[in-house]
Image (cartoon, rainbow, N blue to C red; front, side, top):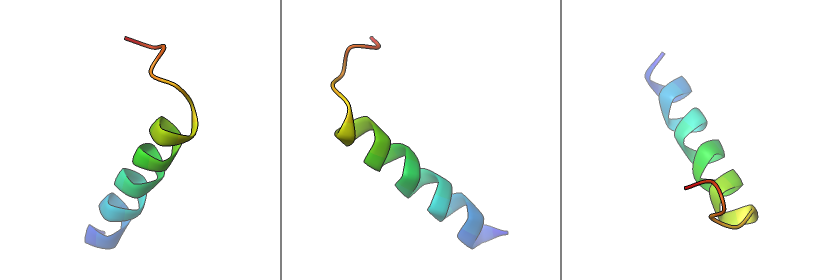
Length: 24
């Protein structure tokens, strides 16, 4: 289940970078 956390983290980072930081 460790790799799951890494995948989710990466997805979150990618999404954050994809869209602007409008959601303070």
